[in-house]
Length: 619
Image 1 (cartoon, rainbow, N blue to C red):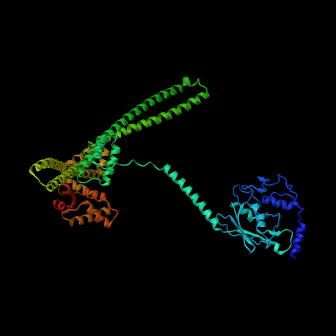
Image 2 (cartoon, helix red, strand yellow; image 1 turned 45 degrees about the vertical axis):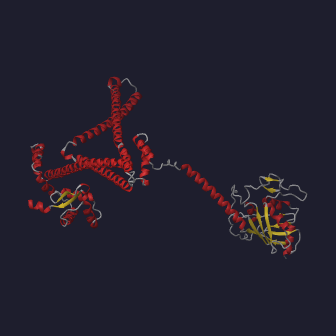
Image 3 (cartoon, one colour; image 1 turned 180 degrees about the vertical axis):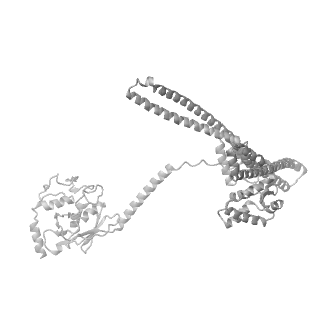
């Protein structure tokens, strides 16, 4: 039955019918030629870029599937792929029934260049298989098994897609109808270790190239490395000290000094060198401040020039506005045409808008100057002496820093004296002459260092006296500030709680007189400030609760407690309370809390004490 159908199919599609199998050969890239060798299809109908001399399709054909260089033209989704009969020299390939489902395919392995061909006829040979699959591409290896299947490895990956196209065809050797000479071939992807290895090598090569490109890009964007820093030596330290004194080399020299200190080059022997270099670096602070003042002066001059230029521009705007005003008068306005009047009116409005904008800018500059002048005037007011307090704090901090630096220098000199004494005690006394010559210089150095130590001690004592005096002045300024705050609160309470006096002032008495009547009472006695502050001291329930906790805490500490200790205790109860809030609350209530200084020199600290019972007894 099968042989009869094959014979009928062969009779239906004879060799003389060149159209069907010529179309199939053309689709596969095989030059369709007849038995005598003449071409059966014209060049215009052949696939583009077909080379008749080679008889094969060119490797890069945009119409072949699997190349993925140029997408194929879109085909209708419902149109089935029609396969034609393929005639070869030793065999013939018949397509399968289009109504049957397509052959199953496995997933394509990465880098696949090997295909599995099954269902081969029993009498097929390697020459016949090569004849069938060589039009798909160059074959590098062909391994045929005795069980009617083989593996074919191609040179390129896109050739596998051409071979897959032949899957499902029925292969017949010659014109024989024997079962051993026919078979339905099945072409599928094969997983070969050589393909996978070459694909992985290619991927690693691409990854290396990508890493190299990324590294080159990062190296191009990376900032240049800083110059190397020389190692510490006495010669380099002397050169660095000279460079620190130069304004142009100060930045580079400071970087070197920072690196040395960070490396840990400071020790007993080198502490004096490093102290002198740090002192030289500190000497540039005055230069920087002078440069800042110079730039500020230049900015003031530029502001003045800008203001004068704006005034000149505004004067010219006024003149132009006067011209427009004169043009809009009746005696000149009647002689202009309607279009000219319209243009003059538009120009006048634009000029007025620009003039108003410039005048507002000039007024803003003047207001800023007046505000600066008012700030300077308020500095002279006793109520605004907080700035002097800040200056006192800054001077106190600078004196402390200088005191610490002198103490450290004194310690370094003491260390040098100890080292010299140890070296003198270790050295032997071979004879008197040598001892006299060798011990003369260390004794002189010890005397010089002792003299320096005495001078440093005197400077330290003088700085401590200055520090105590500055602290006393600062405490006096703070007391005065508290007193002024109390007087301001008293004045505010009187202004808010005396509507009768306000009505009297509105009926006939001048308000200024009432104010003058209150002002002398502010300075009768400083003993009233506690009563004044207690009137408006506590303003909320939270402050009252804090007041009770602070009073209880300080009452059980009769010698007082510093602010940090008090804040650490209260923050255990409420973490939202800040140190500034507690300090402001205690400052507002001097009748209950008093701040005192305890300790001497570096151990000096401020302690808060509870004095509510003392003020209650005095009342």
